[in-house]
Length: 342
Image 1 (cartoon, rainbow, N blue to C red):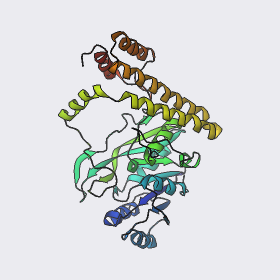
Image 2 (tube, rainbow, N blue to C red):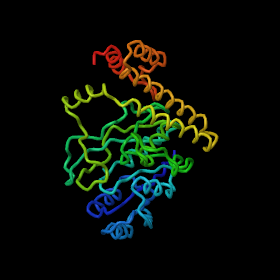
Image 3 (tube, rainbow, N blue to C red):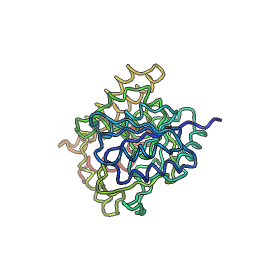
């Protein structure tokens, strides 16, 4: 079987401080990419000069496009990805470091993956500014090596640096027309959110459990700096506070994404339409379940709360392995809410 071609898509903005290390780590891959495509979002430091200098001796083609206006990192990434030519696209941040085996490992799992494989994700070790490992890894990693289509939760997402996506996700869908971000934001969904939503709707995901990159955390990082690992006390506090979940907002966001996938099914190639319709139904069920949980949590009448939890049982909301299902922990928590134990 022919080795799958892979483009590297990098978005840069004032990244001169760490960019050289990232570029060198790409050039040191045991299985080199077919091309490196970069979009610079109006850097005022040495970023462009570093890229131009690297491209002269790079062991693969390097293409740089300088944006006339600042697009923001999500839009910039998607525009860069739309210019990639390979079958697969590996997203690359400007301040991380790839381990030498990353692309070799990715090519291997793609070659042995199922026919509907759309997304590959991998772990990354969290490091400080000096690349010293902190002992943490990226969270929200799939609990299965192979996750079938619609096997993730509706709003499942993974950090962009750990995503390698099939190019058809970018070419077959209108990435400029994305749903709004969750929790009432009026901006479009970020590139990694959108990629995860579409990939989950149309194909399967393969997860590489070993670290394939170093995820650098520093004060100037664009993504919000936060702890990636909770202690037992924080976990327990989070579970207690979960009795005050904003289910009304979750229902609103779910309905908005239901509408998005319904409209997307109408404008997408015929082969995807039924798949997108099914995922729209997943979001519809999630919205209905969230509305029921809002009543369970807040309705003053006991019988209304019991009716709501009964509806969720009939909807099979408390099972597993479906985008809208909650698991038995949520059932016991909802039962405690309905009885006003919590």
